[in-house]
Image 1 (cartoon, rainbow, N blue to C red):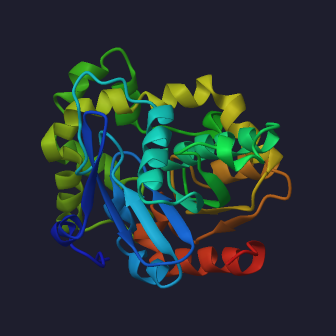
Image 2: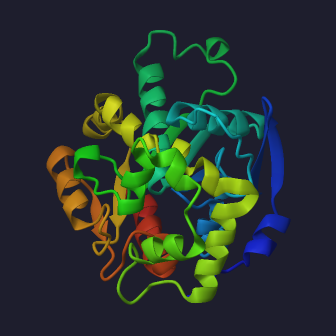
Length: 307
């Protein structure tokens, strides 16, 4: 494997914006129809570097390092939440003058996408949504969603040992002792057997996670596992009601949200559109960028009609 852009080059090509007291890193590129890319835990927007050039030929791309991740602010003692991350995406899109987006999301980003989709569905149901003067800045219309591996149905998600520890009462203490070696071992295990990252690639992923003391807030970020359970009906309901075109592209070899999770998705989502990538694990966009691009472009060519 080899990323299209080095981590340093990715950062150099980015920008920042301010939301409240926080500065957040983001990348944008291209023109036309907007595609919002939402990364997962514990990494950042650099995850998209291998599919970025091809996607940028068809879309206006926007990808942010969420609060607590990558090169964005990582405030200590902060109560991170999925709702706040959705707010921050809405704020960035408003700043860029984007009101309607397609979404490509992964892992933690799947849940953020579900919240954006829930807000979209609520506005469509409300009696005043058709009045543009009442829509307000920051409201985002979701045109379609392509999900990658992630805990869309929390009961089918199987967290790693390190995630369970961080989510436990010992999480704050555990976050102080996560080493590069521990991270690399756990992280590599969620990739496919033939697509695991090299030592150099693991080094870069660690740099991204550890930047600006990021490991020390990991026990706060991991609260999304609890949020998924608390707000299950809200976030799975929008999948079952299927208000926009959706596709799940996934790596079956993922021990966290692989074939067992896709089976749950097929059971719950009407006319579920599911595309497996053979021998791939948790990071399709990193492990099989060509396969992901084929599945994603086919989704838009066959299922999405406004491009």
